[in-house]
Image (cartoon, rainbow, N blue to C red; front, top):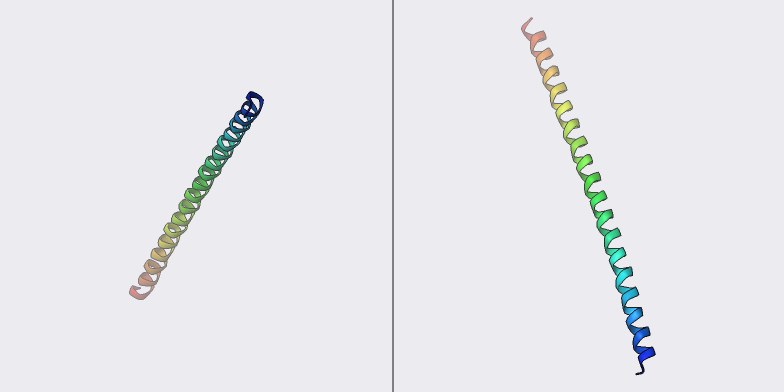
Length: 69
């Protein structure tokens, strides 16, 4: 193998390494974004559950007052 072939192979290796680094960085960014979206969905579901609990407690209270009245 002559020096030109060796330099070309090394250059290709560096280019592949750079491309892989960019792909890994993009994948990490996508994963972070997905995690943030998942956390927002969990918060929305928790808020919906809390609202439902509050409404059901109000309904039970209203029904109890009607029965007692």
